[in-house]
Image 1 (cartoon, rainbow, N blue to C red):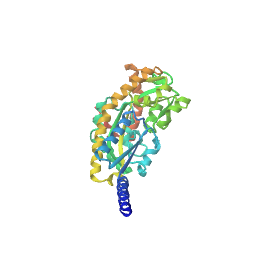
Image 2 (tube, helix red, strand yellow; image 1 turned 90 degrees about the horizontal axis):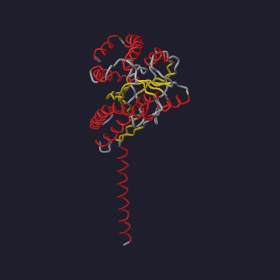
Image 3 (tube, rainbow, N blue to C red; image 1 turned 90 degrees about the vertical axis):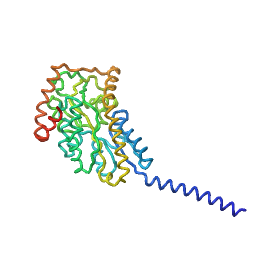
Length: 334
């Protein structure tokens, strides 16, 4: 009897061991996709990243696990592209401004002030042949461009009223690392300071930075409005993102997994574009209700003066980026 009981116990142990081994094997074959970004979870990009995670994991029935790292918790602005090239992360959605300094100068077109008068003009460029050709240029950097995400038009903020171009004189204005944005601020008489997005709030709080440009959703989610007394609705520039993956990682995926990830990304892209303007409108309203910041809308004459001040920047960038390409964007954006 004791032998029978012992045999039964050993059989149970063996059964549990087999189940545990199967679980370990399944865990070992799970494809982990690390998705790092620098904005808050409640921004359009942050929400789209979470939607992509949920959809990709559902479609692949657990064969893929997406780990989302928001708010620069894994990598800051200046580090994330190097991390993607090294394979330390698998997917990013960096600002389009990041690709100019990387050596793909055509992407600098998106930083040129007053380049896109409306969202439709922007869509004509991004969703057309020009947008597709730009993503293809990222192949030389070890990236595969999969989609564009949107975050809308930028407004200016500072700790003093900025109603005219002369109001920018001497202000220390935070920018993304971009030669175009550097030229833009200098054209206004400001001093441009490249700074990681995660460091902006503290820099403003301490007075190291006087102001910045960004979209309402980014401003509100980072509580920038709490340390900026004035904002002006200039809509002078655009912030968009390119969703990119490590090319080597992508090519190594099973074909069916790639297909499912593409479906999940398409869904997340449609969702992101649907909520981006809504989020920005809601964020601007929340900033107004917070009562700490005066929101100013320029008159027609003031807007015309801003555009005139930026014209030399457009002309400079046309020569730098390439006249033929520049004019093709102008034509498509009409």
